[in-house]
Length: 344
Image (cartoon, rainbow, N blue to C red; front, side):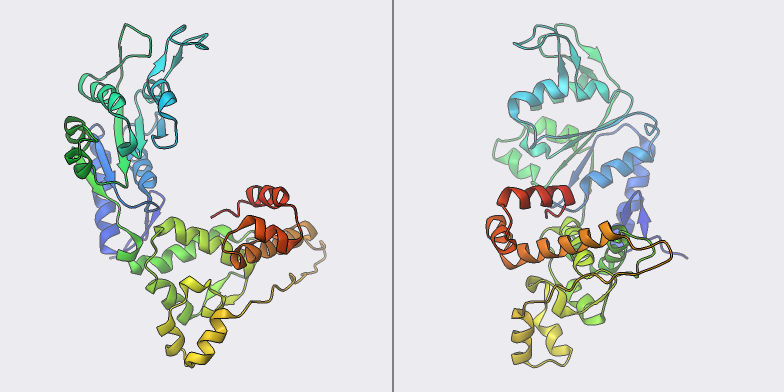
């Protein structure tokens, strides 16, 4: 039997992920029951929610994500439920909320544990009565929407502390799903690395960045507190800094280097200390000439990425100090980091 390595945009062949894939397929087919996804930050809870939507009868309608922690409390109510003209200063025309926009589809409420009690009560009404009332409105509107909620917090503990409504918790947790942390599925790390290296290789003709056995073992032994998101960010950095090369444990940032792996590789403790503390040389990109010429802008951009990431690594992410090392203005460096998506 061929073991699947991916499902709905997720990657994995560990027992935990295969079980999760089966649960997602079952839940998606049913199409209506509320789902509560719990798991640490960076474990891919939104990917799970999207997979449920895409494999459900609702896939032809909207998938509407809302991050309850990212929208200010005073705006979240009108974002979710909409408002009528004149409901408050500045409401010059009526606007439907995201609940109504998701009619026929799926509403994904990320970080539901951060929702304030007054909004919890209004959400409970949506789940119980299948209707939504706009801010300033007097007439509720029927909606047909599936709600999927997610949180990195323990909602049962929040209920016990009086910070989350017990009745809403049970309404949301009809079908509970858990997103496993990366440290509990080490056999998936190699697959994820391969996927991310492929994604961040800018030119498809480039020789792929690879890892030797010791570097791979070191990565698999790391606990990954930031989970898949942390691994993704690291792969982007390494592909930029070592494009097309075979990466050894010496090229990994210090916190990802396993001391036992160094010893296993035949290095003495004294050599280990020297390797860990050494400052890697940032080499200029190799120009590959062809009949069509070379990619001048791409080569310059790659080298600039390397310099910026190396400066940030040396300064522990301190942008002001990194700008000083690069002889750039701090604002110029920040603009480049944002433009090149080097944050993380």
